[in-house]
Image (cartoon, rainbow, N blue to C red; front, side, top):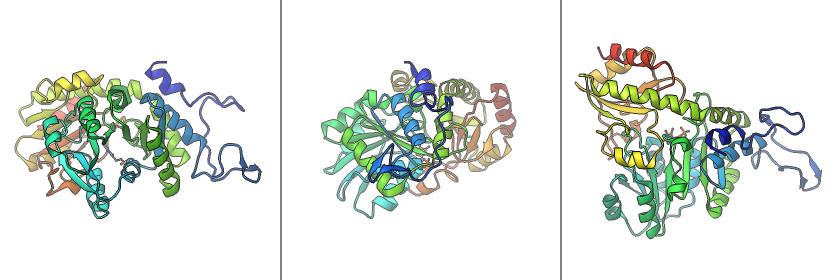
Length: 375
Ligand SMILES: *Cc1c(COP(=O)(O)O)cnc(C)c1O
């Protein structure tokens, strides 16, 4: 079956007992046992939940993977993956990774003895030269946040595997509709399902996806033993979002391309970062590796921080807010909002930098809103 069909049907067959076409939200913390220790589905809700299992099944299918494990947030998925490491190990991280990933590595795993090397992963020679003794894991984000740089996943997988290490790709921005990293050689895909997969800014969730049975078993154990589980209603909401992922992504990127083109010609914009533009430094890899360029656009505003602030505060259709990937358009200043935790670090973002999550509203309304906000 093709993508859109799998998105709507895998894990979501009509309920056998009632015929309900939607997966029930199983609000249960425990399960009746047939006799002592003999269970029908599971013994306790932290271990397994049928709504969660349905969500995991559909995401595994979309990422062309055998295993998917759902978490209470993108960061709890990240946490579970990083717990597969041991003190003395090193992590190589995208130079503009999600701020919270960097914060977790440096503030939580750093004191536990795991070192982080920040490297521009879109530059393979930089990856080679930064490789250290203990580098066990490469954490790539492509497109990255907020510069939308593209790392060559197949090339990264080559280098990583030559050194016997593991490649994790945060696929939150692209979604499996536009890119399936496991088919390009990555070992694990991480998602903040809060974003495009959920798609309606109404639930927080995370996911780890892999074909490696050992990694899957370890992170599944962490999900259970740590208790980093999503609630059944959140699982349902994210699954409902996934059913329309393909049509939403088509519109997101159609609108984003129009926004990127208009802003590229605008006198108050110094530079536009969108992988679909030929001027983007990694455009060629994006064309080869992705099935589209996504809905995120970043810009550098001419005239500095004050002009950038005035711009984001003047939009009416674009809401000034953190996060991304919902049907509604959002605008923000990473240096002061999503990426504050990178201030003073190698990942610091310039203060005239604005990130747009282009929604699926009418394109003309979006363009008009941005024009008036820049005027
Ligand atoms: C939001 C986000 C995360 C963190 O996910 P949460 O669901 O907010 O915990 C990780 N990576 C990327 C690229 C994100 O956008």
